[in-house]
Image: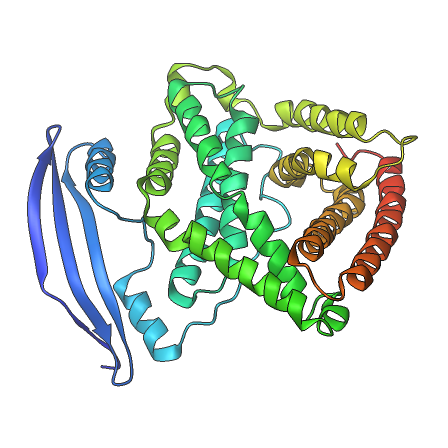
Length: 379
């Protein structure tokens, strides 16, 4: 046996709302000859009755102590100990898999499952490795969950989805600091376009590293994962797709999602085009103002684009390039502020260089925007 678990197992049988649930508590470690990993798990197994009882009990546990939902088994933990953990991002697909026959509720449930799986995987990767690039993927998962609920809420409206939407809106704001962290990560990366210049100015690099450490200390991402709102949202999202509560309130849930998709996509892109008119030049502040709207609209394209195979990639490509440009823009704007705040000897030189980079980037983004605006819609 290559790894062995060492833990006492405590099992309890609990009656919840006329259902019987086994609660198993495992506390110990999985160990190899060279390493060990702690095991602290509460497993719930429905022995008899209604699956809703699992969610009732899980919510009770979540309110009573700091826990997080995990989908990593003890066997998987042991395998990681043996072979090591490679902290790699697992990218989302280009589009959520759909067909023209997919119903509205099926499409919604698929969106929630994909977003939750992305969240769970990268949360686990961060807990195990401490790699901060995983945090960007968690923030992306939370925003995808929020956009999925926002998009389908008008058709699947019910109290449970309204409640989930409210919780997600509040929780997504707790991850807003991630944008600053990823800008700092980009500025400090040896692979970034700015590394060659910034490496000649160790004082600004040191200042940026301090800002990065300060952000992580202030927001303590591991605590965010164990805070009850995170687990509450995951449990509620799983409960919603299990119980389909909209069936008691709404009527259009069994219609093909294709019936709604064209209207949803048109509405989103119409708003984008109104926010960035072709004949009006855009400055950094204008791009910052439309960033959230553009991201939400591209998420809608991710959620629905698989229904329209032809030309979708050709349409999205320049818009995705524009988002990459906005990421670089955010990093440069942060650098500009940092240069002003850090009181450096080389402040004038770095300020001039940053302004030149901003000017060049905006010119490229304006050309990209002109191309994007000329693309024919694919739906």
